Amino acid sequence: MSAALHMVTNGGNVEGLFRAAIMHSGTTLPLGDITQGQPYYDALVAETGCSGATDTLQCLREAPYETLSDAVNQSPGFYSYQTVDLPWVPRVDGVFLTADPRHLVQQGSVASIPFIASDCDDEGTLFSLSTLNITTDAQFEKYISTYLLSNASTAELAQLMTYYPSDPALGSPFDTGDNNALTPQFKRIAAFLGDFVFQAPRRFLLQSLSRKQNVWTYLYKRGKLTPYIGASHGSDLLNAYTGGDILPYLLRFVTHLNPNTGESKELYWPQYDAIQTAEMLVFQDGSIPLALTTDSYRAKAMAYMTNVSWTHPW
Image (cartoon, rainbow, N blue to C red; front, side):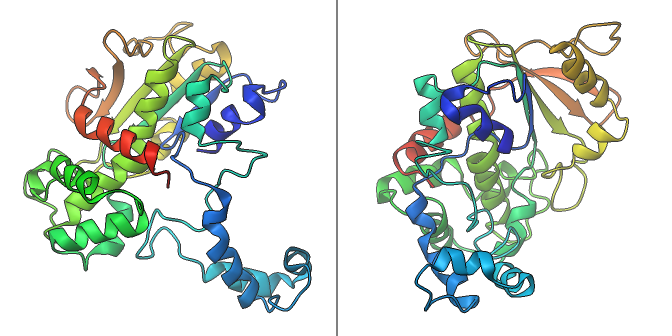
């Protein structure tokens, strides 16, 4: 996510800071205005004893490390109930981010560099483990409207619930049937969170830029039999950075700005082309470890989700 946000800052002018980007599980989030973080700032000020200060920011800067650290650690995290609705996410501040990152991409205010953007198949499972008390449709709808799409209409939420049904066979971990349903809503929440934060923004970025610059994408589907979490967020990193079969592609990309150049013997990884096949490389379990597929799964659901979050940024 950091790499993607650096691509859309400064009018897309990287000023020689970097020449390409690799984004594992995270691209251009649907970010809202900085004022949305005010309640968290106020809580931090109160926890550090800075509420009475004339300049609360300067007071925070001068607070003892232990005091500030303890206060920050009381903020909601990934494994709190509100999970991906983090207090300290980047926000549109008018300086580093002058608008929702997706708007900047659409306006062409984005670095014209080659990049790789990837996801794991079950991005949302880890972040859904703290929501096991949600067991009904009404609770699911309330959760989404409270923490992710607070300004969405009843009709918009209803349509999203149709696209992301409670049927565990359609939830995440995907392609595991009715297995791994910790609660009646767990796999549904996991599917929604994974697409909202990771899959839909990645697809939007690729579809927006694939005809303007060289881009590639992969989907990591190994570990699907891992109970309850499947091919979870970050599960590709051990492979990517400890000599697995992702690493040669990344090394060639870093060296040549193309994952296929040199004496590569692996499966050819096509560039992503949203107008034609939108191919993606798949790392999967079984006797065929590498394959190609089309980036079209849950197409209507993610397209609608993107449109709703466009109107109601996070």
